[in-house]
Image (tube, rainbow, N blue to C red; front, side, top):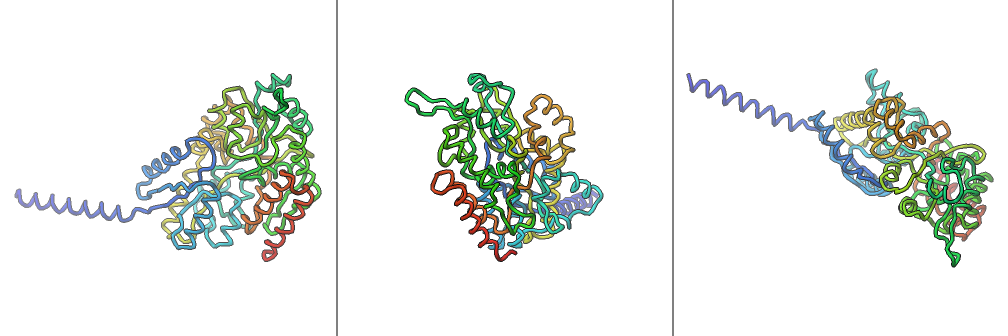
Length: 428
């Protein structure tokens, strides 16, 4: 009798072991490329999200791979795609959409949207963020860490300059005039504190796009095959930026993207333009009272949206693609999108996220967290074209040539237009 029971137990244990091995064999692994491009302990947060997702979905294992800047990440993702071993999912710039489509590297998200819940989720994102996520009647990216450009100002320095610390500049003229009052020189005439700083390395096209939009121009068309760099209003917007530096209220030459927040913390600059994705970084490191505002208006208010989308690899297996879709949907649920916004400063991607109790409370206690959301009605899609890296480089080179004084704004934009036209000719 005992022997029979022992055999039954042994068979049951073997069956259980077989089931366990089978379950392990069915685990779907997702490699997840993630760009680290702004300050803050973001890798720790992403690791926690990946672990939490796997706990809730034990049949799926997410492995985050930190691939450097956005530019590094797109290069690595496309290199891996061409080698036949791409990441299953990646967070890449929303502006990489046309490039990823042209490389046949991604699949439309629409094919995974099957249930009423899926459809409601797809319709929940802010329309401004979908402008860089959809083309040709299809959705190619899922908004995740999205942003706008905002203005940060040091309230203590405003007070010292005799300005109202609670009144940021609302127009270009006000920003220029306030910047003059906020610029400080030492006894030798050297500037120790600039009034305003707009970075011109890393993402100069993005910061400049704010000025172009404010002057009434969208620099690229919706289909990504034509640009308007030499539009008189674009040249006028660039002249405004160049004149800020010429008048001594803005640092001369190329201003580094990465060190701009540090310059702000060290009171080397009183106002800066940068991503709302730096908000938590600023909150944690500014040892003074600061404010956050929408960008000042030219002919109108405006900012580009920015940041990254989830994309799903075309070369992944159907099981991996479905798992990646599940992960992207999980990461952008209202409660999680709200937490991500509070942890990082990025704009939560849906109205539902701002209606969560946690983000309502946070916004009431820390109103700067709502500025980027409130700017969305004035926002346009971030500049994006086919062969985006090369076209953007033509624009960046033109902007930097004007800012360093090697070309006039008119000549710089004329040359950038000619180069962009040459690159985009085959996409007409």
